Length: 457
Image 1 (cartoon, rainbow, N blue to C red):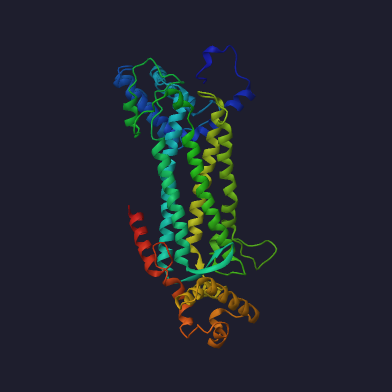
Image 2 (tube, helix red, strand yellow):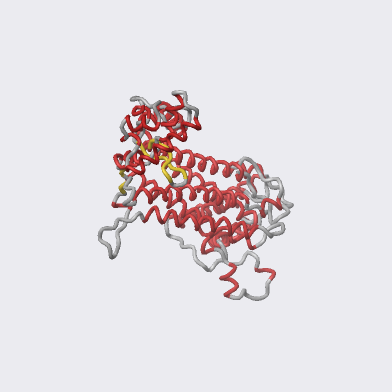
């Protein structure tokens, strides 16, 4: 059934129909399409545009279609151009002429804009819950690893010691911002385009405030041309999803490094690893690698839609049909990655001794050794040079700073005393850093308390 066939004298070429049709992918909008139609006809009856009897028949028919699709009794086929024509055709076949009144005062342009907003709004709630689960997993891991020491890196070189709780806390902050970005996107998109028509509204006395409220929007959009031509909310979502994937990819990269034989910081659960077809000893971090790889797929969706939209004049253009496949695939990808990554993370075991040993062997306490001298009255620049000489000496002897004898310390600077060993211990290096946001136990305990309150909101 073509919703626009009256103007044409012959059938559309089959290849044109296939190229033009969107039902192969927009069929997933069937719930939102029916939800929007129920709101529309309820308003039409309230405004006296259709009768209450017609409204009741239409809603009964739509509810039946929704139930039959959901329970598998009605299959969405490729005969129809899009989900809108599929639903309307089946409605008319079920209830007759009353079904032909469904589209009064409405265009597919405002209809599809509404469907996409409703769909994205629903998906944001699911994505937010998945991130909340990941945040809760990180929170619990942080609580369990307040005294698990690990080298902190800059330039992928060991820099200063931190705790695993502090390291994981950096990702907690990233994913918390990701969740906030999703909420911001949802807030901005939450205006209803229904009633905007093709681009210039309609002469029917529609109550757009009523349908907006009916569907849980904050109100109606205020420009009918922008309403049908706007895909900013899709681009915002894809941008937020790209940032989520960037954070997942960074974390995956670290897990891949930590899982390597050289680091051996973590042991991945068998359920989240694979083997080699030729090398029997291998246990590969495939989930982390796939998450890292699929990041480019989500980036591609964002760049593709930005490119589609960059040259479009007002108002609606068929190019905008490209938004759906890109968005659906990106949402599916991110949901899958969040679920699998959280499972991998929660089942991962940490080799705490290897982490602490690595922190000790990388001169991560060199800054604290310099601070020790400063506290003894040595100017910082001189202290920096003295510790540099000590590090060079240690490299030549294949020793760590804490393995030096007091005599070796004093041979380079007589300022050193026996308390140098306590000053450069991992515990002291970490726990004396207690400004908010630092890795010390006191500071981390405060942050974990704040995180617990955030997760409970």
